[in-house]
Length: 455
Image 1: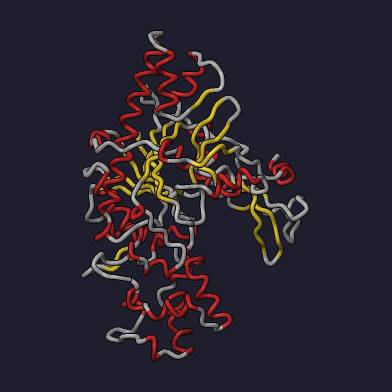
Image 2 (image 1 turned 135 degrees about the vertical axis):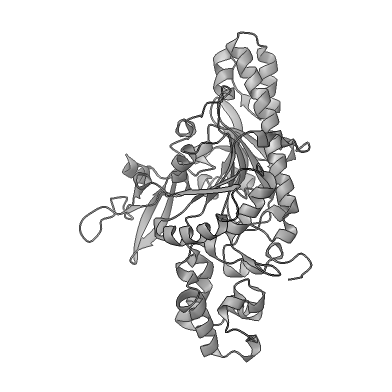
């Protein structure tokens, strides 16, 4: 069945328009009551840091000094790992470094000393403070202490098995003096791996004749998310952290997203109870579906349809202004019987259709992966999140194995197809809350530096 997906190719999502301010939900202040519920922060963190240093690895291979490499050495002293990298008491002057010096510094960073080439991104020192440095793990804990229940800061990381020992060693030192912080972790499940195909859409065979299986992408983490015991889940990528001198807007926006969600969740649960008691007004409910949840029906609303749309998980998604970053965005999507809001990746959109391409290019907002999810029903029982995904929103990408090209299959994306049948609210959040680290020089951006410093 999965091999058939390669032959069928990606199924495109029928986007009707990109989301504008009209489809956004306004944040109306903060209601700390959300902290009365069991909150947990879910952080996908299985990625290795290798790709962060791709340009430096390339330099080791060809010794070609690109603008990227030049910037890395010019600003070397600004990196949080600088003092660990150079000999104690030394100060590196980029103007005095010859090629051999640069090769040695990169080797110390990636292989011989810091060994960051073998580290997960979660354990890279990213921010420097007066008397300490901080990894993404430290920053996620610090953030959580500001907007989760201060007496029970609960974080869950998904990590790669090969990083478990490094992760455990680091965490044990962190939580020893933080009894209010609980950190758990899980691995992407083996059974979520997907078969690879060759370029003719046949199974990709290894030297021993066995089919190559690969990790099934972020969508595979839906099972990890489904295993957690929480009322409200905050989801954020591991590398999206900022310097604490600039974290205030992030804290405020997280509180606002949770407050918006709690208000709408309370409203939805009240309507479900009315429907169950046969004491309801369908016109009123239809107005809520359209005005609050941006669900536009193409057919008459019935009690059954009202329950279908209301009684399901709710996600509140922070969106930033589109500044051209690669990734997905918010769209109004036609699902046949109704229109609703979805996060769609570029690969899910038919770029050969001029109208769809025009919609994509008109996108005003971008998905930074900043979600607050309400995952229990009106009775306080857990939804089975596996029931609310859309199986045919998968991704096929081209990769390689030992130099041989292949096609890889990824499950419905965690915040795309895996949450297709959720209720969705989009809220604009400040651009300062989005600080991804895709390459090492991203750490020189404003969001990763002391607020008073200029880049």
